[in-house]
Image (cartoon, rainbow, N blue to C red; front, side, top):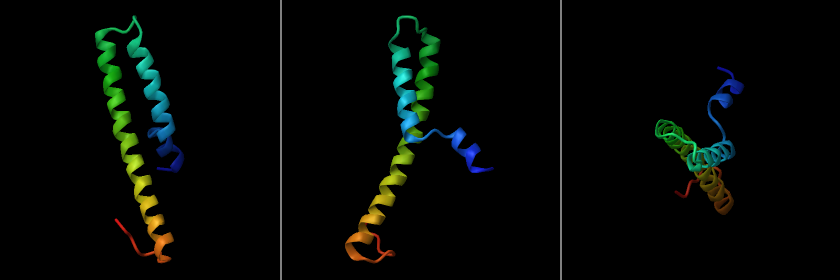
Length: 79
């Protein structure tokens, strides 16, 4: 699979938060049925899980970079 297809399948952090905002607006609308609410909830939970994993990866990279800056040793991790 090429990178473009992978990116289309998993939204980035910003896209996930934007879609979550859209889901919330739809959930808050008077027109949202109970069945649709469950669909939106499920989609939202998947987006949250995906964003959480992406944030954890970024935080790990930042900790590694911070360790490199403090020690000057690219192989040193302070986790």
